[in-house]
Image (cartoon, rainbow, N blue to C red; front, side, top):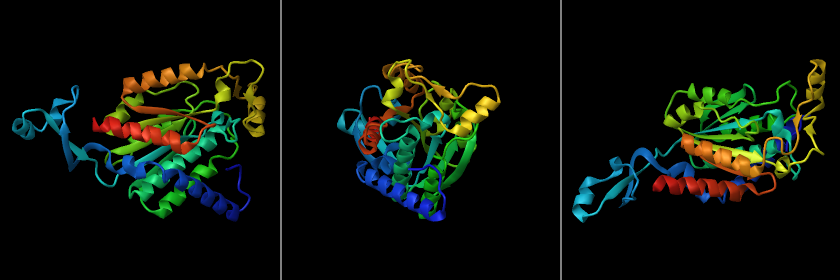
Amino acid sequence: MGIGFPDVSQLLASIRLLELVARRNAAGLLAGDYLTSIPGRGLQFHETRKYVPGEPARRIDWNITARVGEPYVRVHLEERQRDVVIALDVSPSMHVGFHGKTKLELGVELAATVAVSAIESGDRLGHVIFADRVLDESRAAGGSKQLFRVLRSLLAHTEPWKHDVQLSDPRAAIEAIERRPGRRFVVFLVSDFIDHDIPEDLKYLRERHDVSLLHVYDPVEYEVTDAVRFRGFSPEVDAVSAARGKQPLGISPGETGTLSQMAEFLRREASRLRIATASFSTADPVRESLGRLLHAKRRSATR
């Protein structure tokens, strides 16, 4: 799904294939419920329901509570059209994969599925492609032309990495999003988080926006062994590193800890920052995994 495009016709064919895969995935994702009708801070009244202990008292509808004799809350919908921003990490470690696709190809499929869901739901779509810096981005817009632009950018950045950079910097994406004017965004940050870098800046992004971390991984990279080393993300990268007297970029399986340790790290950071997170394996179908995350977010928002 994306190592170079010798001509325009092949690029167009690849975009059409990616869109087809994304639409097939999106068809099973709660019919777009998360992106268009998740209860939140909007002004459109949705329903009343019984108060759940632990909810903020400001949600209580005191008129209904006085009338029925037990606490009820008012549930509102977000604005119908929302700005959905996808931030995709394309740093060298994302090119690893041993289950038919790389982490980056999985990330592209996830991003494309969210993108199609957003556009089909009438929302506006924006994106940020980043590594150690922002490589491409677009402001949120609606329509098929914007979907095409985002899918084209996603595919263009699956090409072999040609820069002497190993670790990603999510702060670059966060700062790019924070600079954008406008209303509240729905942000999906897609990365392998292999260097365990969850920026504190997310706390400030979360104050204004709805943020989810989508952790992509390959099961092999968490199998502890010294017999294998992931390296040579591209010959160009190794050549640049060697010319500068550096070791080729790469990691050994297990070098970043076990999968359970990573899951615990993400859970702890997500809880601390009050953001949603989920892990996606290159060995598992996208639709089921992404559907579980969106369903969980919708349930938590209605409580």
